[in-house]
Length: 171
Image (cartoon, rainbow, N blue to C red):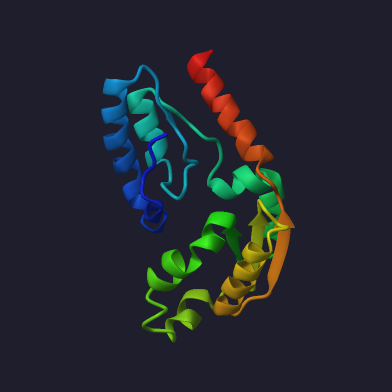
């Protein structure tokens, strides 16, 4: 496993280029490479890189699909379009990836500009019984000024998608 910086998700236009660069290096060293990203806001640019290099990636528009399932996630967003989504990773890194990266630590008045059209936060909880994560999810929603809904998801859908992706490499 060769990770890319998680903060690329704050600049999704950079994901495809970063994947192209790393995958090129890895293809020279390994016989097979798979991409552990969904589209993640690249609007097809990642698929173009995968097609160009003959790579497969995780399915879905974003990681949220891999936790909640595409149809379930679509139902959440159809029911309440102003939904801000959290994963365990985002809950753990919220102060760094959201608060600091958006400048809310320095300019808290921007919260209203960024989040005025959101009406709730949903935590797609891979570890819903972890009291530290629950506390962090509640704190993140509070910082956004949003009510929190906890949806237990576990990791089963992600594990299945990864297993299928890797089976194609070795199969």
